[in-house]
Image (cartoon, rainbow, N blue to C red; front, side):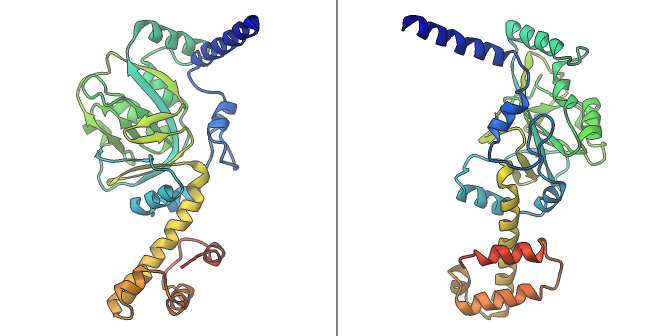
Length: 310
C-alpha cells in the first residue's frame, strides 16, 4: 500500500513538473478549460466564435451583457476603471491570455529554456512571445499584476506588431510605454491601468493561454471580450451567442417601452412589470413592423420569443 501511495505521489509530482515546463497548455488542455464550447476551434484549441457574432456583440451595452452573465451564475467577469488611449472605441475579440510575475532568477531561467525548446524567439524579451501567437480577431489580454513603473508590457514597436497580426488592441492589468506612438497606430487601442516611460524590468512572462485574473475578473483563453470606455466584460465562449441575442431582444423591448412611455400609452408600472397580453400583442406587432433593420434574423427573433415569459 505504501509503495502504491509513493508511486501515485511520484506520478502527480511528475505530471505537475511536466505541466510547469510548458509555456502554453496543449490544445486538449485548452479544450478541457472550455468544454462548454461545441463549435469551431483554433489550432491551439481555443474556441473560435464567429466574426459575425463578434460584430453584433459590439452593439451590446455593458449592462445588458453583465445582466445575462449574472443570470447564468457568472459573477466575476467584469473589470472597470481603465485608462484608454481612445475613449470612443469599442473592441470585441477572442482572448489570448498571458501571465506575468515579478522576476525570480531560477524560474525565469526555466521559462527561457522552455521557450527555447519550444522554438520561441530568443532575441528580445519574452514579452514578445504572446504577440507571436496572435491571429486576426484575437485580443491580447495580460495580467501584469498592476505594475506601472518598469511594468510596461509594450511600446509602439510591439503595438504595431500586435495590430498587424490581430487587427485589435490590448487589455493589460498593467502598463504600456510610448502612448503617443501607440495612439498613432490607426485602429489600435489599449485598456490599461497606467502608462510610464520606463522599460520593462524585474518582471517575467510565465504562461500563455492559461486562466488568469484581470482585477475582479476571471479570464480563460478563448473567452470573448467586450471592451468599451465603461469597462471590459469577459464572456465564456459557449454563452456569447445566447448573450448577444438576449441582449438584442432586451434592447428592442427597452426601445418599445420607452416609445410607448413617451406616447403616454402605458404607465411605468405596466412597462416595468410582467407585460399584459395587450402589451405583448402590441410589442409583437411593433417588432413585425420595425422601422429599421433588426440586429438578428427574423427566425432568431421568432424562435426566441416563443420561449419568452413576458
